[in-house]
Image (cartoon, rainbow, N blue to C red; front, top):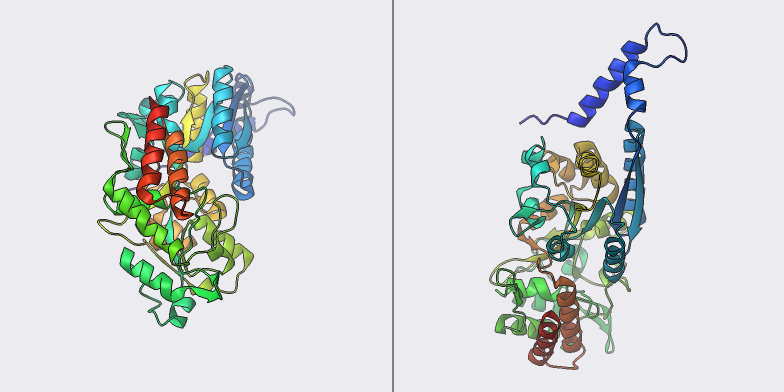
Length: 429
């Protein structure tokens, strides 16, 4: 199915018309199209992005500069902020002060709260007339929806792919082309792949953070059949037998001394330093390793990861939203259309490892990342993110606390989850 590049075509028509109209005119005389363009009202759009990595910042700044050049009456004020508490504080301050950004790029965890408070605008009417709507990943629509309305469009879906070192597998007598597929195999492989010096782990069998962590317990619990959160009935369920069993299983890696302890968003994953044999990571981690020129890059293998009742991996999504308070929703949507054009998404793919959210770019994605691309696109079908509930930030903190208490042996899995569950219920009520 041919996809019309509407924005590029209109721009070409305007430019061509301007050139023709300008032929034979005296120097300094404006063509009709130019005069009409210069008379358009100047508009400033504010754009707040969650995330501070330099590669993505550079890509967005370049995209914005190109858009402003094509639309001289539009100025886009770009800001960025760290994820988590910094983002929530920033959004709370802006919305409370009546200075909400026109556009927000934020994670899935913000949808339920911001939509229910009337801060994010529903985009259904815009999407209905969007020429590219059938060229957009179907499961990405679901990610940006809440209670039957489409509040956002994911521009990045970060599925956690299973990484492993083929050379370490061979060294341990394991088939380098057969990564683990079950919990039992993962634990067995981790025991064979761990290297100790005395009691110190110098190479972990399976690397995952044991502090500041929710992206391990949640997908593993889902693999085991737990909902973790019952979104339909708006209640947490993570103290069920399935999640307790999951936490007990993950705690075995600490009990057996198979991990190198580290904290998410503070310490580097040992796998990325060459000090672990298996982990879950994102495409961005792979592109960073390639950029660093690590000598073992060709020893990496990839898969969808392990499962029990099903395969499930954790996925974050960076979603484009328009604020309900925006006085320039039409202009904000036109800028979103530009960001979702093939050329813009292609730039983000090549420079930041972003997802091919456009169906027409799947082949380009695999061409760009032939090693990890096929595994990543397959993993997307097994990916779930944070639950879409208003109390998602509080749920995240509860899961982190329970996980850390069990991993450090401060509480058994059931007690840790029960305590976190009861504390979360009190906060929700």
